[in-house]
Length: 200
Image (cartoon, rainbow, N blue to C red; front, side):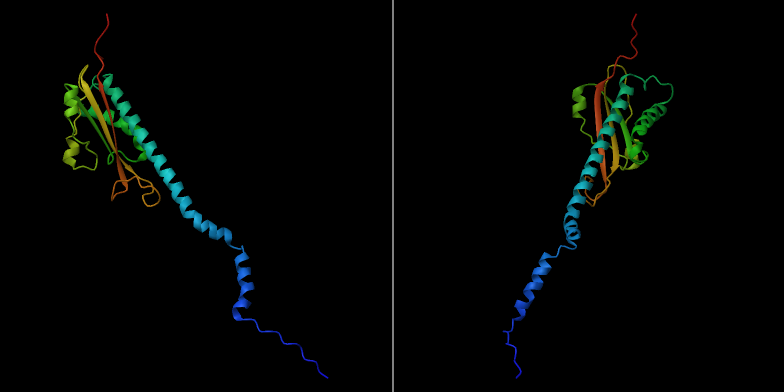
């Protein structure tokens, strides 16, 4: 006599899928790639932002160093006592500044140097004209004053340098709106030394 196997109750379709779901949830293959894809954008944003801001502040410090060097040449009378025309004297101070800033690009389309004298500090405070940068109209660039002054005169040396930002699309954007550039302006105000005075 043939014995029949006892019939098992049929499991529903959803119950059969439970073990598969558990296996899928416990599968760790590819987890590192998924986690990296989630963290990578934030990591890259922070890395590029840190580099951009650090390089930007470095460029600012170099511009400050260049204006200090230009001011030293004027304050001590080295520029005033050079032989040659005013244009030749300007070229000396311009080239001195450019030698410091050429790490960031060619100076002829980026750098302007302004040297102006004032009779009083009140007159200096009243001068609120903005700096003229290299992207200004050529007539305005040509009109930038170069007046190093005589002994004990009040002088302002002002430099404008057009800095190209590194990554305007990722992370912190330090460029001016609608551009990939930033104007870096640095000024130094002083009174010229009595460089022609001789001691007995």
